[in-house]
Length: 287
Image 1 (cartoon, helix red, strand yellow):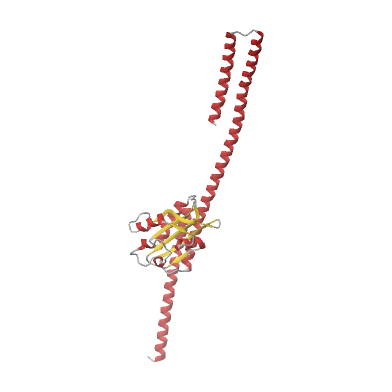
Image 2 (cartoon, helix red, strand yellow):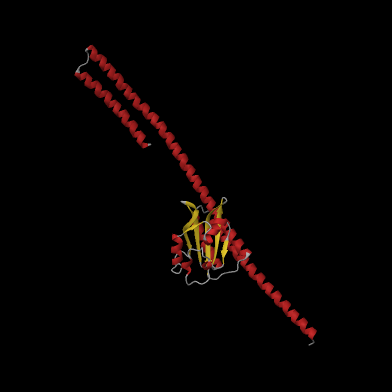
């Protein structure tokens, strides 16, 4: 075989090898896209009717970790007593594991300020934050929990509802993958699904608060009407007592009032007034 034929043969082999590699890469990419599509479909269906963030967190953490083979997932929410701080939502994957107990305990007790550490940066910047090895981050306060793990890749995904970061999901793996646009887009889509659930939760809470205000207003209005009615019912027997007292006074002046007449008139009026007033007070207490 002459040198030119050998060169052509080697060129053909190289071309075939490149085509094979491209085909394998395309196959892997298509399989990945299909897995991601199925995962997003499961998350979307499962969270479609949820109005509480807690089950949405648990579902998303479990689905993502299982599908991507990431070892640990957790959800932070914004603290009610400090809008600049993240606290644990007590949602985990896996829910209970001795291997991750130290990390769970430190995370449960943690208060993450805006901008500090991986989840804090996602909170501050309102964008996905990726770190190839969180154990090398001096601002990552839970580093001791990863002792003996080796390199730990972490990603923090902000959940944005009505333009505000309301939660941050974090995922960790001991088998760091390559950060790719497809993977980042996947996390963004997952975040939108969880954000939809949190927006429904916020809307439900506002509706409940509004209903409570309307109910209280109605009760106060009803109570005011009842108070006016009670006042009217009390005024009537009091007026009768006054009139009766005036009449008895006139009889006494004219000398027509004896002890027995006084007792009968007094007893009748007082008993009648006591009955009316007692009933009015009973109705007021019922309200």
